Image 1 (tube, rainbow, N blue to C red):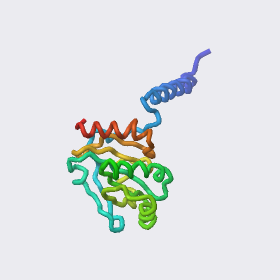
Image 2: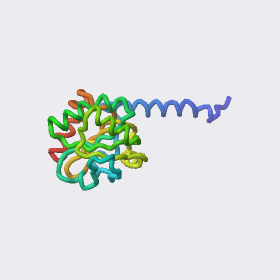
Image 3: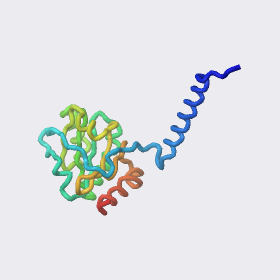
Image 4: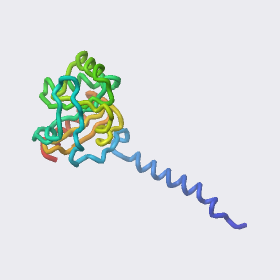
Length: 180
């Protein structure tokens, strides 16, 4: 009896997929989504003004200060969860945070900030989602740690909880301040 080569194809495909899945789960934090931007210059800032709030641009990201760029929306429940931590970082610790209001209605965004407080040094609207696409956004909230030269040091997908703040954001802020 002669073995047909096509009969070997399914087990070989299964084996290849099994190896791929196994190796991708061997990351240090399999829940964290990787970014291609780490260590590279931040993509262009392309926002429009949100009401009468101060807006930021590309030059702001390269002003010599370590900062956060936070993508958020009023319709995003996890954005509400992280908001007190952003207020703490901004108002108590003095960290500049630049907000990008993602695919939101201006009135709803302003209501969100009026209700929970405004931790942002400046805010811009990304109503079309183009800036989010350029930054590789998976969804909101997402936060980027940017060094003083405008390079992305870290990208954090999801709400900044106390745990995320201590395990990911603060170490990235330290690396950014050290120029790494």
